[in-house]
Image (cartoon, rainbow, N blue to C red; front, side):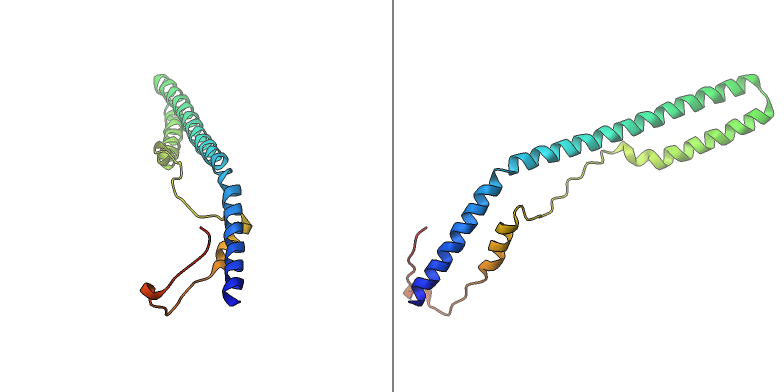
Length: 139
């Protein structure tokens, strides 16, 4: 009697796991597409920041060249301060030269029912001697 009840409970867990797995497997393709979109957007934003900083640097260089051609000492000192600030900003942005996409893999349960079913499975331990043991059931 206990064996039949145990087989029934195991069969229910097996069916619920199978159902949850099949339902979550269909969403994997969508998740991969979302990951690709997020990575592409991250890289696009990184490129835009680099372009903005390049434009700022071009404008600063043009302004400094114009001031140096005019030769007024006060303007040269102001241009030196602007150029120093621009160089500091570029030092802060140099981390953007490497792609900022994230390749870490983390487990997040795709479906709460699947996660609960896996958690409720528990552990099976037995003191039985394997060569003398016989298991029956559906696969």
